[in-house]
Length: 275
Image (cartoon, rainbow, N blue to C red; front, side):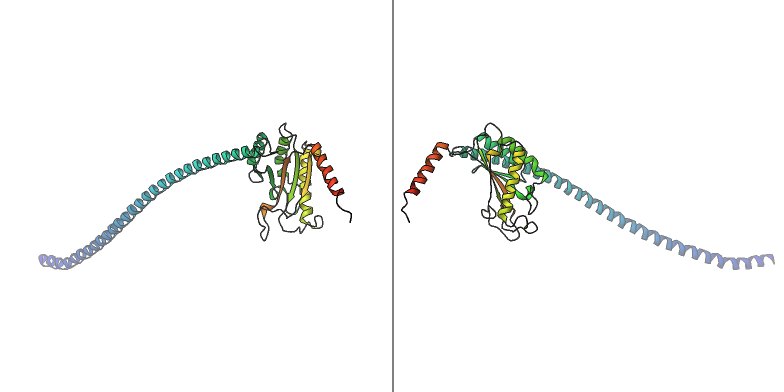
């Protein structure tokens, strides 16, 4: 009797154990699938990471090469700039030597001082070795439509005054000439009705500044040319190149020669027939 009951119990337990084994196998298979999927994802991410690393290394190499090329280009630029500066200096020296050959030309020492001074103020002062003209560009020297000197113009005018008072330059007379473009004064037109007034007022301002810096006023003459002697053709809206104040150094003619010329002119006038 006991044996029959044991067999019956076993017959009941066996299906349950069989069902449990089937469930565990299914879960195991699913876990294997998940694992394989994760492994595949890991391989893909690893490959992508390696590709990005390769791209980064390649870009680093390109960047390093570009830096090398930039350094080379910078060195080339520096060398070219040095050559340009040397050529400009040689050209300026030749122009000064040629100008010394002209009658009543500035001494080479004075011309060199003026050229060096202009080089110290490249944005506001120009020097023309062929004519001996020193140009103060009005946009850097004056406010638009005004004749009051900017504070920043003081150092350049002081430097010019020192040159004008040197032993090599003190025998020369000084002409200060104001120029404008063809844009008429607007906000300042009550004070300066035309560009002639404005250009003359600016020449006077430069003249006064030189006198204040010690230049003998007897040596100074001023003139205003307005828009009538442009360096370049005027364009609509204004032409900065034509807005300027020029300073010229010149020697006065011998007083005896001047007197003789005046006598001749008077004699010629007296010989004209009566009308």
